[in-house]
Image 1 (cartoon, rainbow, N blue to C red):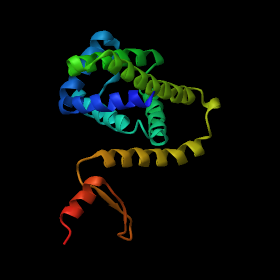
Image 2: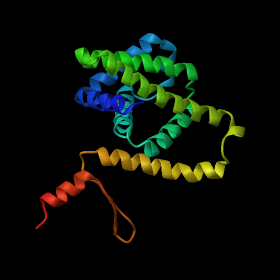
Image 3: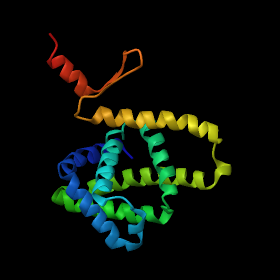
Amino acid sequence: MTPKQISLVQETWQKVKPIAPQAAEIFYNTLFEMDPSLKPLFKNDIVEQGNKLMTMLDTAVSLLNKPDKLIPAVQKLGERHAGYGVKTAHYDTVGAALLQTLATGLGDAFTAPVKKAWTAVYTTLATTMIDAANAVNNPGNSSTGREENMSNSNDIALLAQAALAQSGTACMMIDRDFLITYANAATMALLKENEA
C-alpha cells in the first residue's frame, strides 16, 4: 500500500460511511449471490453482522497509517475467522464482493485508481488474516499459548482504544482509584466546550 492508496481509501470511505447500512446490505447480498455456500457461516442476524462489518472497516481504514496498531488487531481477527470455518478461498470472494459494493456505493467516484487502492488495502488485510489463521491451524509454527494469551489482551485493548478514538461519542476510562486513564477526542472537545 502506498501513501496515495491509503489516502484514496480513506477519502472514499468517508463517502461510504453515510450509507453504511445500505452498503452492508449490498455487500452481503452480493457475497451470497457470488457464493451461496457462505451463508451458513453467518449464524447471527445479518443486520447486526453488517453493523460489525462496517465498524471493523471503519476502524481498519482509520488505522491504515498506524500499522503497529492495525496489524495485530487484524491478525486476531484472522485467528477468530479460522474458528468460524472461514477458508483461504473465501477471502477472494469477500474481496470481490467488497469491490462490487464499493463500485455500487461510490458510483462514478469508484475510479480505476480507487479500485486499485482498495484492492491493495484489502489484499494486505486479507493476507494478514490468512497468515494468522494458518498459524492457528498449524500450531507448531506459532508462539506458545501463554505468549498468545498475554498479547491477546493488549491487542484487544489496542483495537478497543482505536475504535473509541474514532467514535463521535464521548468516552473516558478511569482506573479503580478514579484516575482518568483514557479520554477520546470527543470527550476532550466536550470538556473544553464546557470548562468554566
